[in-house]
Image 1: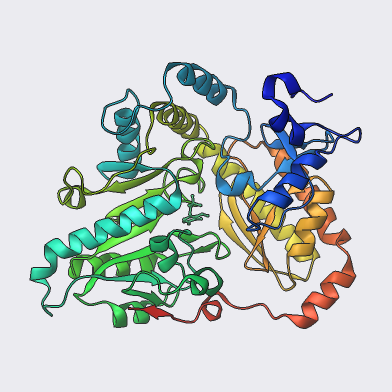
Image 2: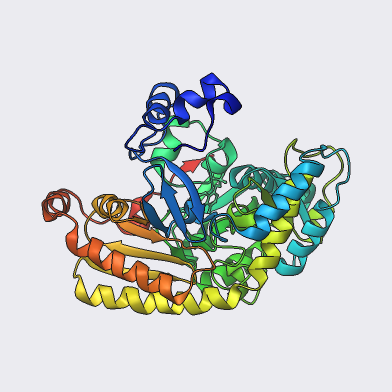
Length: 448
Ligand SMILES: Cc1ncc(COP(=O)(O)O)c(C=O)c1O
């Protein structure tokens, strides 16, 4: 029986939530189909709750969640410490506004500073808002140092990487390379130029004193789990320093423990000037953050940037609790990551259409030589949540708290999916499409 009672929720709310005898929330799906903007193509499944690494739909079917709300649910679902924190703090206060201090914002900023080696924090509501804020800071710093640019030109250009994804708002989509996300909204923010992925010569060619920032995902997520190389990072760092520009690391998907390190960039020997985080930060509540060094922070004054919702007391309390839990999970992330890699490589030896396994910790891309959509649909049928990015890469983003048993369960399920996905679909897809390489995917587009 539905736990949603008509008299508690009111008639219009309960309409979509009433379950049919077969357990399907047909009203909820019909209302979504009729009233939502059609920005997503969703399967006819309604999820009702989750526990740990599992979610359940309205018919009671259980799914192993190796998508984690697209890298958000690092602690799985209904983590008791997060539930307790949200219950407790929501009864105290959800929002005061950034005009006042709250108990948790400062301590959360301190924790992020300790983790990152960067010293100041600004809280936003999402990844994309944090990226936009970081780009604004780059322009602000560029303006302040423009006089010293040897060319005498304004320091406003931003370099981003081909195959990047940084978000959907105007600033973030302007530094996102994928044309289907950009072109419908042109003209975008001017001054952005794309550098071939991991191509040091191209970076050097495009860098000069007019550049105010280079922005990159330390490991490209949406692009198919592609890490920047140590050499590329080091050169981006040295060129940014040489030309008085900022190195911005987008760690929204790969940061906050996903690699088994606090930040993915911590495998390199230098730091960015700005790191941007979001997704898992508040265990599913919407929170992003811009972390900056002291030089960037010194350009900021009251009123120059702001937001209404970012960093409220309840959400910051949940984030603080999340980070404390993640601190104890880093070793688990590394160990499970090794098991996942070994298991995926074994599958690669069994299925010739697996081209490459990329990633580490709780972030893997399984690149196929055939389209991945049919495998995702079959996985859903078999009770496994994964997704496919850039048509050919199956993305695996499990919660950090998975155990050995869940890794084994995943590898079994995924093996079944790989062998049982209808061959007809594969044959048609293979003959029609060729796997594009990450560099070929996004031709260098300039929006000066
Ligand atoms: C690397 C990266 N940057 C930025 C974003 C945008 O974050 P949000 O969806 O919270 O706006 C995403 C989201 O997928 C991402 O993966």
